[in-house]
Image (cartoon, rainbow, N blue to C red):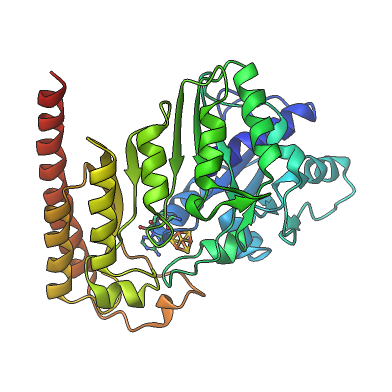
Length: 363
Ligand code: SAH
Ligand code: SF4
């Protein structure tokens, strides 16, 4: 999502007459488009911003901007402007004000918009010449208890069906042959009487498109209709990313994920029956507040049982303002790191084994 948002920022700035530099050394303006999902991402941004001293204009955009608002200027006085994810379209206007000398303090923050104008999706700027990311919905209303996304990106909004198709057709006309549809919960897409599988069917039918994929499916909204589309639509990747997060029902409930282990397993079962040789990937969080060693082992057991082709494994990171941040977090840093390492090792072994099997099957 952030890769695409950075392209949107580049696109609107290019249209406003700015030049995108190949390196930060040449640039007069540096904009950090940021993520707040885990503390680690935030720490890296603060440390990078701290490394720029002097005459450049520094902007903080995206989720951290929304989170910190004007407090960002106290954290680092080098920052000249702050623009939240819904306000990135204002960046040319902000830069205009900053360079007009009208703003003596040289500090501007824009974090109040609830909606992006549709135009920002149509600047035609894609970093990759053949592969484009296309946002189908913004924000999220799921409120998983650990997650900051609904707070910084606002409630779920679906883009209009005709606008999505128009953006994709523009991309294809510009030479793009592979499209990845993006949303925090793509399965929930519903606009103008078009649901997600209908949207996939529409995009799959577009002439000039060769490959199609999507991120991310939420297990509580994934269904047989989706799996059937994965199997049937010729251009659609036969890979499903279905974040599990934990293999223990008590933790899933505390996470507010809206499904049980049994329901997740039933989904995987129908996916594998419908999509022959389909690949499966997931996200896991270890060290959620109060996760016991037994619950951690349940997650490891489930990972082994399911056999994911790949998994993103994260250490729980408390996010201020979320429900989970208020839960007692008694696990030590060493315990979380130990579990993280164990599960990474386990997944590496599973991925390697499945990769070898897949290669063998293909040969
Ligand atoms: N909308 C997507 C996920 C977006 S965030 C979904 O629900 O699947 C990507 C991943 O980051 C999540 O799946 C989760 O595993 C991880 N994540 C989110 N918040 C986190 C936190 N506070 N600590 C650690 N990992 C987190
Ligand atoms: Fe966060 Fe849950 Fe929404 Fe994903 S579905 S963005 S994890 S609140």
